[in-house]
Length: 274
Ligand code: ZN
Image 1 (cartoon, rainbow, N blue to C red):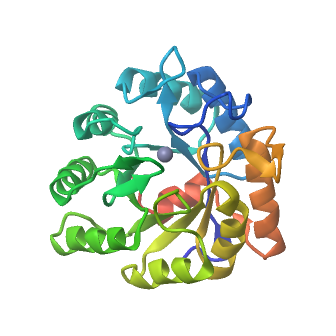
Image 2 (tube, helix red, strand yellow; image 1 turned 30 degrees about the vertical axis):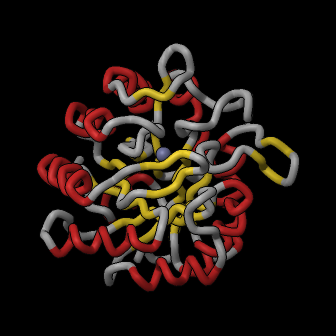
């Protein structure tokens, strides 16, 4: 555990949110770099990164990721975690390309198949093994994203097979429509199923975002906020920016006696490749 500190991740763009949901959504590499700087200043240590093409549609094109990351790197030391979840309908090969071509220090690794509203995301064990092997070969630290309880157990199969190395960092995604709702009981069942010594970032989707932040603080987890998960700052009120969410999360943490961790803290703690 990080002593008296908490890691705040900002998922600033996502794949499904649009400017129609919230006009402040950053979609171009330039907008995303501006967001990265503002979120770092507000207390975020990790930026969870999706990118969009020139029409604002989600893309896994490594060239677009490269452009965004280069702009971010010029201006801030925030840890960049690339998505390999991609968007609904992407093939496994498309989703993996940014990892194999850019070798980021961190990336998400989805741990199972799940409903996603009326759509679905497919991650079979063979696909997960392939992802884990490519991550391990390149020393890319995975955030093991679990949308349902069975996903935690699937990740443990990968650990048993020697495909994942500690420290294990989980992303517990709760309240996706069609998957597990967020309650303290469901969170607890996830946390108790984690391997010993694992850390977790709690992601409450939609209206679960704020309660999940309080729950993460209470349960020793880390926080994720951002437009990928939620576009409302409070009931009926759109957030002005991703940084506004980060600033609130940092305030909640400080009131609980926790300082927001820095990117340097995360790089040391998760043993990221520099
Ligand atoms: Zn994502």
